[in-house]
Length: 203
Image 1 (spheres, rainbow, N blue to C red):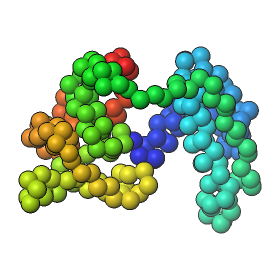
Image 2: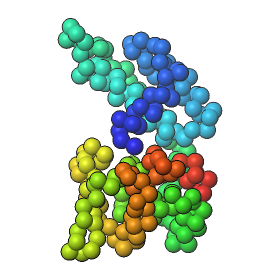
Image 3: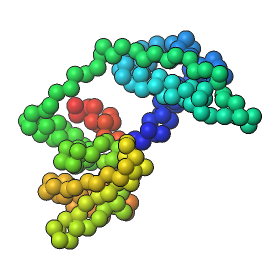
């Protein structure tokens, strides 16, 4: 997902708790109901912090950049939004080849293809999910192709060159012709993200 899509997702979760408040009343105190509810739902602290970061970003822009029709900022100053200590984060570790093979075998076919492409190209989740055929550039001299992802779909906003090794190229060929626009799809629609419920069940 792009940064804007992520903000929209988090703000949708926040809306039942602060959506009716004037912006001047949005602060860490009024966010406590949201924090408590998300904890009861079993949501990881990192995810809650991402939502709080979205609120902090909006409040900072309202105090420093955004102006009303009179040229005044929406807020005199932005309240301090402190993030929560992350004690429940899953510790990362590299999968062994055996673990990777077991994981991929447990995934639905469409997710297994996306993951195989991802580990062989180093692409981010959103770059794989949004990959389009129109971004493919043939390289006839090498009997292969590359993909150039426009910067608007890349985290650092710079065009992303995706070079295909033999495995990534075979994944591309396995889905060629399935959908006219998107490379990776499920039931005729682009897959929004790899780390969905299917991924969690397999993991």
